[in-house]
Length: 610
Image (cartoon, rainbow, N blue to C red; front, side, top):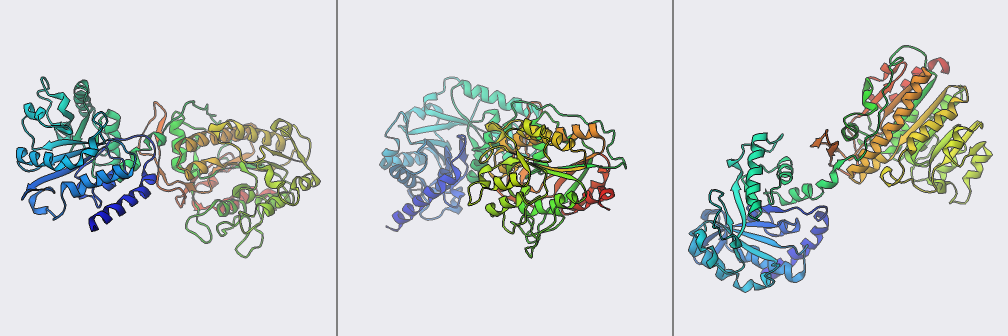
């Protein structure tokens, strides 16, 4: 009774586990020495292992599951650890109900032990009642009878064949798979890459075994992510692992994380004619890639044929991103630090810790004759753009943030989320018009507008991602805004945000991170092109924070493919790069606080601010 209750409880746990680990492509895992797991069978099954290994010792008429006699535990038998749970999972419909190999590695004398195995499995016929598609196959490994005797053993008994020296006249109908020691093919430790000679050896044995119509497994392989990926790419059918959860978590969504860019974006190569000179600066363009850390930039670069417009630049630094009250910032606090030079609490948009307004760059500069603007792929009430016009203690105060836009000195806005301005009691678009904003119906109309103030709502709600149809919008919006501001014949400040790199990090989506990064780079190209033509414009490119804790374990530059691995769905405190181009761009080198960007911009523009 106690045993049945335990099995039922474990069965219930697996129902909870499966949704967490059953995603992405199908991966054939072999759970090596599975009985050493904390929950033998169940952990491997929850992680969709296609083959589960149990070492078996015949002692006192019992089939114990253990590696050697000294480690036998009373009650740990083939039936209790494997056959009973398998029957339970089948009867209750737990898991994905995919075929399983129970690989029985016999450690004692072959014939007597195998005879006991045949006897032990008889009560479990329901596991293989469908002989065309059995739920479980019993595959004998370790000590086995002579090959010519394989045919004597009844269904569902099959065998693991461990030689390639003699492959003719084999009873292939009784051989389920071929297994060999990896050590006979390579001394690779699972780090870096396999050498070409070893790769060719592996390809040769796979060609031979697959030519016989059988799957293949190595044992004694390195048990690492790099190894799992390399062997699966070579075509090894069963990936040997002692870590079924980690292996499944890594391999099952590898195709989603290993992204190939379909089209390369043409980069802009700056002239560098005015870069780093001590000359005057009339205009500042600040581009913020939300969540765009060094790994994100690298991924976009590799995905774009190993180059970006951004990576042409020479003046680079690093920003510390901590907020006033947290080691890891959010976009509201980071945006406020960049916009106002003040460290504030997370979730605070343009408001100091005491609730008073933090004076932002548009407010500072407009009082000295500057025209100012913001462009974003986000809703205009989003945390980063809002930091350049709003003053609220909570980023979710959408109604109040929307009302702040008409009160700001901004001359230009472009972004999404018109409904944020119309869905509450007051229609804030009326206030925008009242304050002199010409609300245009297109970017083209905005670029040609003679009004002192203009705005464009790009959508009623959120804009789609690049891969869903927004391609080219940010660069076109940047170009249109620069055309508009340049016609005012005044110095200007423009903030441009690429918001969806952050979204890709939050949902751990490689395609979004890379495609949005490339899209952001196209906007950077427009800014640099303008700077080269103007000669008195400083361009600054940075991020508010990093999102996703991304690393890039593998890739292929020739095929513009990159593997992204995510450690979190949240922001991290990793320092973010800052690039600068144009007169006085060297001022932005070094490592410093994100709040110092505001101060450096003020220093560059100091002749205007006296």
